[in-house]
Length: 326
Image 1 (cartoon, rainbow, N blue to C red):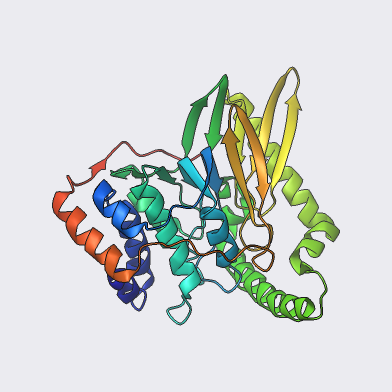
Image 2 (cartoon, rainbow, N blue to C red):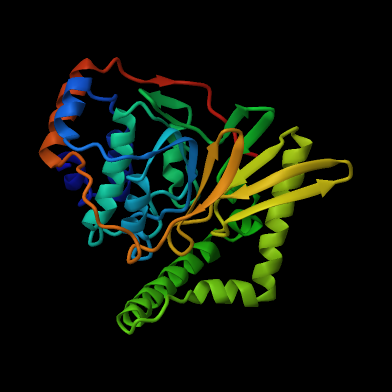
């Protein structure tokens, strides 16, 4: 998009504002949609999809695989559960086309009557100042509560329960830089392995699995979140943040809660899907394993045209009561 790409060259606040602006435009008129979506591929209909920890704007983001996943589904509700754009490491020198395509895919969902709920995380925490804002089918919240079939679901990013985040933010940010560097090295090595006909390996995955403190942190995080969810009367709790996809049952006396984690789009390529009363953890193939069948999305000029038209017709936005995190 012309407007958004020009903002990429400015400061971080402008970048995230451009991202929100792109998502918040009301859906185009059906006639316009039919003009730009010339070919309508078959998509899986999903009631709810939860994505987190995409980290757009970093070298580790697997945007091609994510775009492949997004064009394979048609969700009724899409929940972006934090760390969508990585503002801690965002650099105007790095915003590839594949990352822009992900943004366009989300925008296209809005044009197809998908409700999008954006729950900011720690890496995109600047968006939290917009919490409680609703523009068209896009809403920004600090948490979401879903009332599903015989099930109350509590959804939030999870950084509020990370003790390190609360007391050593500088250490966490330093660790994020080291993590991104490790992912960059890992990406280069995996490219070489694929050329040799071998499978990928994950450095950070092996480290997390082998270091006792990392395993202890993950277990403690999951148990803490689940215990609080039970105390709050929820049947299911969904988080992101720790890049560890999971589907577990925690028991506290006579009470149980289901803990789900949507994982990430750096290593695990995972998402949570809800259909017909059941949650499933979806694992998407790597981009080198997916089909490259074309699925047209609006180009720059078409999106610009839609923005101009819809801004004239937009009824504006409303600010609802802010959802407070714990």
